[in-house]
Amino acid sequence: MTSLLDEMLAARGSWTGARLTDWYPDGQLARRIREAMQGQGNWVADAEFGRSFRDNIASVPVTDPLAWANRRIELPDGHWCVLRLPLLST
Image (cartoon, rainbow, N blue to C red; front, side, top):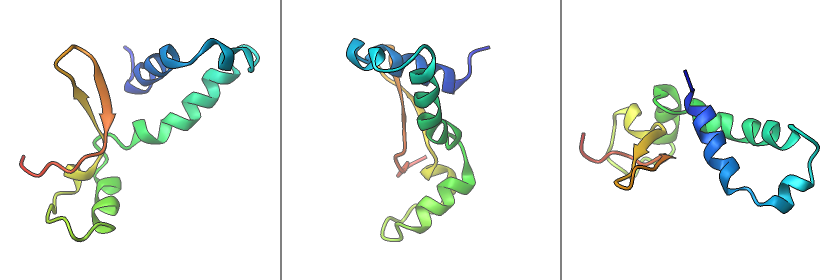
């Protein structure tokens, strides 16, 4: 089973230019990208992260911490993204 992080890495890898891949030895770029994206992937559906994010933006009246957590958004063209966006209506 493919994890969300694996899917994020595959998508990010397809956007990485050849010049950048040439700068790193085999596997090093993938490891660096994985490390950089792991936090974002781990915050998907994370109520504690959503709560801390929400509490730092008190001017928006959305109290549900999961409304502030990262989520995978399916796009109409069949693609997807990971996004942090308060859901103003659930």
